[in-house]
Image 1 (cartoon, rainbow, N blue to C red):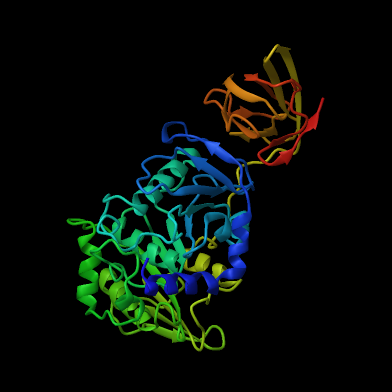
Image 2 (image 1 turned 45 degrees about the vertical axis):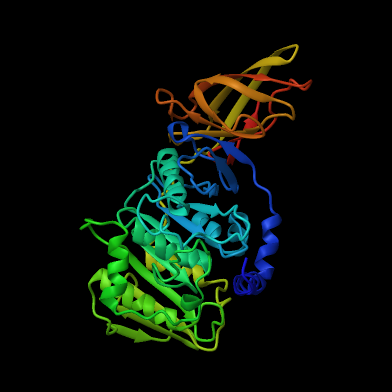
Amino acid sequence: MSNSLGRALRSLCGALLLLLTAALLTAPAASASPQAAAPVPAATLTEVTGFGANPSNLQMYVYAPVNVTAHPPVLVAVHWCGGSGPAMYSGTEYSQLADQYGFVVVYPSVTRSSKCFDVSSPQALRRGGGSDPVGVKSMIDWVTAAYAADTGRVYATGISSGAMMTNVLLGDYPDVFAAGSAFSGVPFGCFATADGSEWNSACSGGTVIHTAREWGDLVRAAYPGYTGPRPRMQVWHGTEDDVLRYPNFGEEIKQWTDVRGVSQTPAATDSPVSGWTRTRYGATGDQAPVEAVSLQGVGHNLYAWGMAARVITFFGLDAAGPTPQPQPGGCRVTATTNAWNTGLTASVTLTNTGTTTVDGWRLGFTLPAGQTITNGWGATYAPASGAVTATNATYNGTLGPNASVTIGYQATHTGNSAAPGAFTLDGTACGAS
C-alpha cells in the first residue's frame, strides 16, 4: 500500500473513530439462499449468508422492524472506510426510523483489508461487472424475496466510501434505485483507476473536473442502452473537507443534474440550519430531482444525528408513515418435545387470543443451547439454531380470533431436549400454556 493511500485511509478511519467502536457488535447469523429467503428476527440486526452472487465476499446485515409494512421499501445503508455494517447500524439512526416508518434496512459490510468499498475498478463501474455492486444487488434481491419488498422503492445512502458507493450503485443500477443520498462523496467514475489501486489522489484532491455532460456520460456508460427513469440524488459536503475535497460537491451536482436532465441553476435555495446552504434542482419541494446541502466550515466527518431524518424525507419514506400488518391483541403457545438419544421432535401450537385476524404470521423463539433444527413442517424455519423465526406456510397464514395452528420440527441436541420457553408472534410476546 502506498504512503499516500495509507495516510488517506488512516485519515478516514481517524475521522470516524467514535463510530468505529460499534464494529465490535455481534449479530446472529441467518443462513439462507435466494431461493429460500425468509424474514430475519424482528428488531434485531442479523447477518444473512448465502444471499446470492457475491464476487467480492461482502457481508450482509439486515434490520427489519416489528411493524414491517406490507411490501416494504428497502434502504441500503453503506459504511465508511474502516467501518462495517454493524458500525453503520449503531452509528446512524436508520434502524430507529425503520421502526417508525416500517421499511427494511440492509447494511453491506466490506471484508477486504482496507474496509473500503470498491469504487475504482472497471468491474465496479459497470452494471453486472462484478465486485461490490453485484453483491449489494444480490442483497436487495434477497430482501425482495423475503419480504415481498416494493421494488419501486429501493434507496441507498452512505458516508465517505459509502457515499462514493452510493453514487456507483445509482449509476450501475438506475432501474433498481429510486433515489440516493451521499455524505462526503465524489461523482460516479471520479475514483476510477487502471492500476488496481483503491485510491485516486487526483479525485480525492478535487482536481478531477469535467463538464456536466462528460460526468453524465460516465453514468450512462455504466448501463449502455438504458433509457428508463434515473434515480433522484441528494448530496452533502463540508466546505473544509480535507479527505475528499469540496470541489467534488460541485462536480456531483453537475453530474446528477445532467443525468436527470435538469438545469444546473437552482430552482430553490435556503438555509434550513445555520451554516447550511441547501439548493434544489429541477423542482422546489422535498423530493426534487437533485438536492445539495453545503455545510460551511465543516470537515469530512460531517454526518450528525438528525441528518438521517432529512434523508428519509428526501426519499419520501416518511410521507404517510407505515401501514403495519395487523397485530394480534394476544397469543398463546403450547410447545412439547419428544426426545431420544441425540434427537427430538417438537410440536408447537399457536393460538390467536386477540380480536383481530392475523394475515401472515412470524413466530419467534430461541432454541435451547445445543439444539439444531434439521427439518420442519407447517412453517419455514430460519436460522436452524439460536434465535429462530418460523414463518407461516401458504396454507396456514390466516389466523382468526381464537384460531390455532400446529407446526413442528425435528432437531438434534447435545443433552438439552427441552422445548423453547418464550415465544413472540410478529414481535408481540405470547403467553404459555
